[in-house]
Length: 499
Image (cartoon, rainbow, N blue to C red; front, side, top):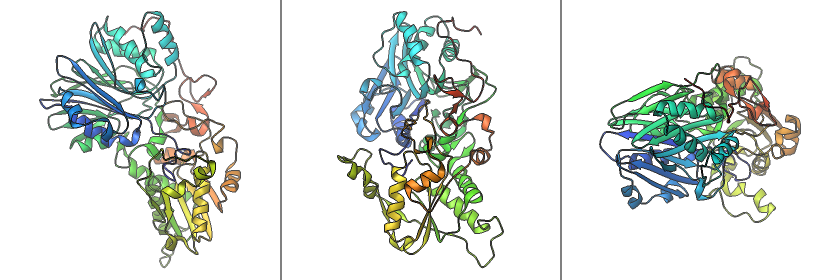
């Protein structure tokens, strides 16, 4: 959770962000750099850009934040009007630089660059089969597996067929931005688990994990890339072609993108994330509203939920009756101030210091909470340590009652598709009831949002969402886990399916 905001021990880690651009004449490196800044929230471990100038591929990949990974000379060296970029938080593969992206490979049919957001669940099988065929791997990440499989297919097939055959072999979650020489491609997995969209610039086109990156480049969002679709940008920035390569009966959009990961100003699957969070906040009031003096968000991710909650509370009472005219409802206030200069990796050598680390990041505004009953709105509870500290913090600032409302269902199981969420043993809700969690964090009351409310707010059926982390049943075939639908895993040793 963005909790206590970015407490390193008690939050889901962001997935990754990908971007690709194809421009008419100007170099792609600087627009890619700006777009990666817009996607920085999706990964802080490494950043990279690959470009192509029509003759050769150029690459710069470095550990750290975007602003630290590139200097002006690096951008100058990345020649060419087409390219891709990536920000990474590691979810598959090591933390070392060999797993940083975009991943580059040169082979007989040209050069490839590949940026991946998501996680394959059959990467090891495909890697073993490719290694047996003579492919040498330099990392243990699944992105290199995709690159090698695609490179092999490109030796024998045209670009579209090669991508289709790779899609038929890999299983799991992926949104990809790819360069094949000076051609930029975007691919979204058949279930649409990870977001990817396409936008138009004044002099070209852009693919990105989130529309906020398109906004940063003064572009216009065209639409989401469809699940199972390949988008091929023209190298001169003049247009794009699309190919629906794989059809699926249902989707598995990650609901957590709307709850936590995506920027609130992004549009994902035709929904503005900010408005979805406000809807979730309204539903939180409808399902479990509690009459208190003040409602306040955990910054920053709880803010949109809290405004929706407060708006709904102004219209109806907690019992669902119309609010009397003379009753203003519950005051919305900022009761926690965030220190934005405390990073994710500040040193916490002892358990006691780790437990008190939230105080470095959040400070209560005493006048907002003193002598009042307070409702705190957050997006999720992972391990529970941050929530415990928040409740204690607000009580010590003088709150008479502390109620906690969560804008998502309880997280009971890990994510295998690109979110570093925690193991079952670490997830507080995996073996505790809501009442047991309330007792542990010492809140006066605790309620989560229901799964049905999430589906309603997203205007989606449960069957079209990935709800694995809140149900323990997954849309992909994960060893040892239950599925929530019939799943056909590709056979890695079978020949690629024919068109």
